[in-house]
Amino acid sequence: MKTIKNRGAKHLGKILLTILLMLVPAGACALDTLHVEFMNVGKADAILIRTGDTTVVIDAATNSMGKEVAGRLAELGCDRIDLLMITHFDKDHVGGADKLIKAFPVGQILMPDYESDSKQTRQFFEAIDEYGVACEPLTENRSVDVGPLTFVIDTANESDYGKNEENDFSLVASLKYGSIGFLFTGDAENKRLGELLKEGVSHHDVLKVPHHGRVEKRSASFFEAVSPKHAVITSSQDNPEDTAVVEALKAAGAHVWLTRLGSVIFMTDGQYLDVVQTE
Ligand SMILES: [Zn+2]
Image (cartoon, rainbow, N blue to C red; front, side):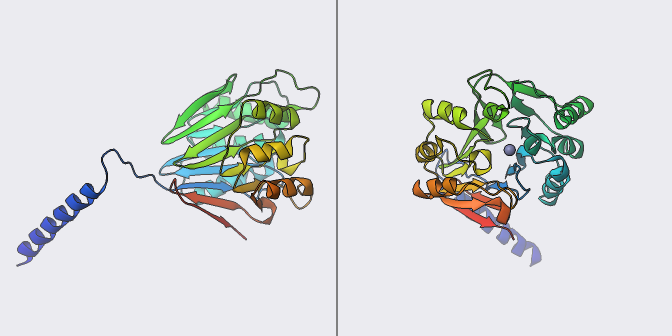
C-alpha cells in the first residue's frame, strides 16, 4: 500500500511540475530577490547588495565601523564578497575595507585611479597585498558583471579637481535589476555632478544621494534628472544633511530616507520595490 501511495505521489508531482513548466513562458527567467542595504554607520557609506549567493559591497565605512560592516555581512549569511567597490579613498569610505578583506574572501576590488596617501589607504593596500586580492583602478567607464548583476560604472573625466577635491574622483555606479534602477554616487560634488549631467544621467528609482547630503549648485538639476522615487542620505546626527538637499529631493518627487535614523533596506524582485528602515 505504502509503495503504491508513494508512486502516486511521485506521479502527481511530475504532473504538477509539467503544468508549472508549461505556465513559465519560454525564455523567461525568474529573478531572485535583490536586497540593497544602506547601513547606519554615521557620516560614512557602507552599502550591501545581495542576490542569491552574490554579494557586492560599495564602500566600507570608517576604520572603527569596519567590524560592524563585517559583522552585518556575517549575520546575513555571506561567506564571501564577490565585488568590493571603493568609490574613493576618503576615510569614511575606505576606512573599514581592510577589515572586510581580512574577514572574507574578496573576488575583486574596483577603485578610482588617483593617488591618495592616508593611514586608512595604506592599511587598505597592505591588506590587498597580504591577501592577494585582484584589484583594478578604473580609468574609463565600463560595465562589470558580478553573478547575475551588471554594474555600469562611470569614472571621473578629469585627472585633477584641485586641492582637497578627492570627492570628485568618486566612481558612480548604476545597477538595473529588472525594471528597478539604483544609482550610487559616492561623494560626487559640483564638478562631478556637471559631468554626470553632461553625460545624460537618467532616471533611477533609488538614489544614494551624493556626499552625505551636502548641497551643491547643481544638486537640484541633478535630482531632477535622476527623478528618484527614493533617496538615501548617509548623514549622521552630528553632521546632518543640508535642508536644501532634502527640499530639492522632495521637489523632484523623492521620498527621503536618512541612515542616521536607521539602516535603510530595499528589496525588489525586479518589478516591485519594498523598503524598510531598522530602528
Ligand atoms: Zn564621504
